[in-house]
Length: 84
Ligand SMILES: [Zn+2]
Image 1 (tube, protein in one colour):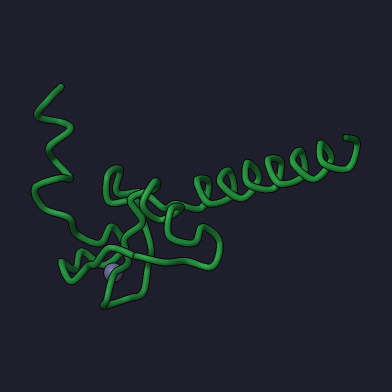
Image 2 (spheres, protein in one colour):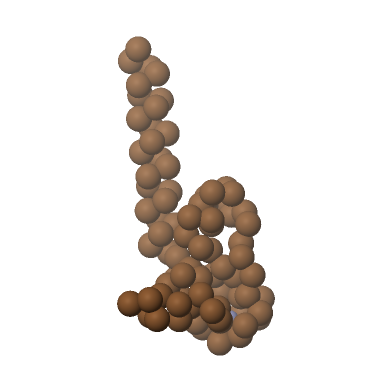
């Protein structure tokens, strides 16, 4: 179990082109500062592909989920304030 978890922690490479020139994304339009941190959002400098450094997979599902959750929370807050 522990060995499998460490597989991506020791050496993060781009899942698309296998380049090791990857860097953490600090800010995105969809998640601000917190979103990319939560999703371990990483960008490849060679092919511009963005992915989750923890799973080595694309973050598209995570980004959609994050946006939906943010929208629901914002809408709930707006609705709550309006009905007070
Ligand atoms: Zn790449």
